[in-house]
Image 1 (spheres, one colour):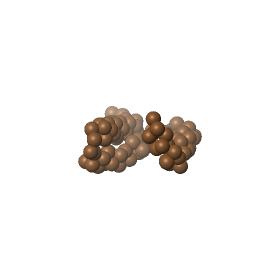
Image 2 (cartoon, rainbow, N blue to C red):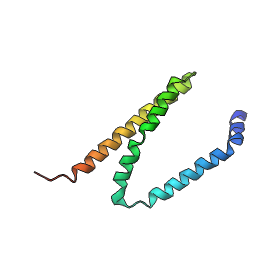
Image 3 (spheres, rainbow, N blue to C red):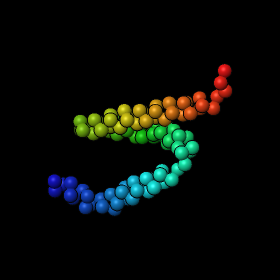
Image 4 (cartoon, helix red, strand yellow):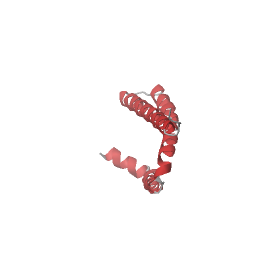
Length: 100
């Protein structure tokens, strides 16, 4: 428990930045009109490819089993997000095609 408290005290500035980013993200997303939500989300999900690459790099440098498990989970969840983004984009584009 003492190690966790030391970590929080040593990285207080970064933790405040993450908390501020969460509140800013919620505020920005809540003001996006409904008509723009799907294209923005599909684009943001596609950017998750960067997360997948980072997770693969983490797994390559993992020295403990815990780090390997976290890297594997990051790869799986990032891949699900990318695939979901492309599925949503495909469904959205289907709406604009002419009916036969």
